[in-house]
Image (spheres, rainbow, N blue to C red):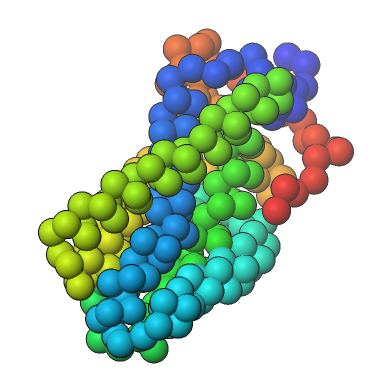
Length: 244
């Protein structure tokens, strides 16, 4: 059988159920990330009241999150090329969920700033690695459309955080910020368990000199999509470079 690249194999398999599940898993965490990023704008009034701060002081929790995102995007983007996309995805969404939830139990504003910084590291790590890994499971001619669909989940997260903030303000009053941080952490927690289902990127496996493992992932995608499994004779893509 003639040698094929990973992209050629993915093109032959096509985009079917496996990719819809992939989009749902990645999309859930993109929506969760949007909720984490935007939560402080809604939480600031009750946060300021609870800790006796001015509104500009309260929104510094958002600054801490953005600083964490900067560090997370840079560090985890590089780490994903060393230890694998899947491992980094699981670690980053765990950080997102754990420290996002812990933020709700802060006993001081300084503690909250520190926890939001750590949450931001997780959020920043998920975004570039998610995007790259989603692209690496898609045939080249479908990537643009599917990645635009992935980005659409950010808008869904925007709507959800607004609804969560509205409900929290009605039910919790001065404690609304706590409930809002709990609600924004829940999608990431669900995303953690769903990501355990994901295989490693076949592109990454091939790049690391593991063609047999890459073939197994391609077979899994083919079976999930109802396509014929083939004994792929895989060839490296010489012009391919890391997307991180």
